[in-house]
Image (tube, rainbow, N blue to C red; front, side):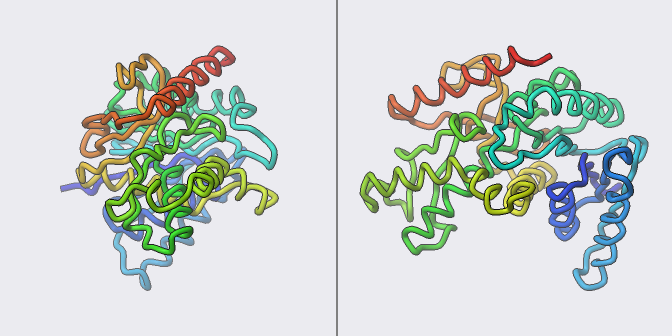
Length: 312
């Protein structure tokens, strides 16, 4: 049986980190695709460098780099990281049209080479780029997924665990809605620590401080880096999604999905909890929300709709 294949489009810091995490799992072959006009030979260097870790890490995964698309043919999953990263002080919205042009071109080529693939969109502004990817690919909603909630939820859970001094493995909480500093919605009402409601463990002001920090998670890291943006945690969140699809793990992970009635929202990408497995999104789940949380989720969807009006 041929090995499964994953193509990572864009070999910057995030794409390179994704490739490293994935090859060390030893569950598929990996193709790094990039444009030499922008990347030079960096993707070829990263593929060779990461390959040479095999004797010590013990994986048999094959990783190659390509400037074109022939080598990507038949991919099971295509992860799209291509596009300009956020710079300090830059909103995701400012990236809109420049990245839309890149994503549109890359996804059209990837879909032609791998018509049965699942596409995971990482490029920002992510919810809007999912629309671009779905239109460019012609794929159904089950096979166009936005990575945002997985990362935002990881940050939220980490901050809770650090505040309480407990294992992050025992913190269960989701961030849904949009993937921007102002539209993501940490669902405090359903957050549990060892089964105990978060609101029973912390006073309201500490909960709100954690929520605020989670919502600025990417911006905080960008400010600390000075140049560039986060890539360690984003790569971990994305590869968890890839692994769930390749191995049909049927994991429940918050993702951006083209809503068709969830929370009363239709025809726009927004975050909710999804079951990921073979074929992409197998089911979606609606969390029980307070009236305030539901209003914020709906506002996030409306914000994305407004952003889409700015697309060229």
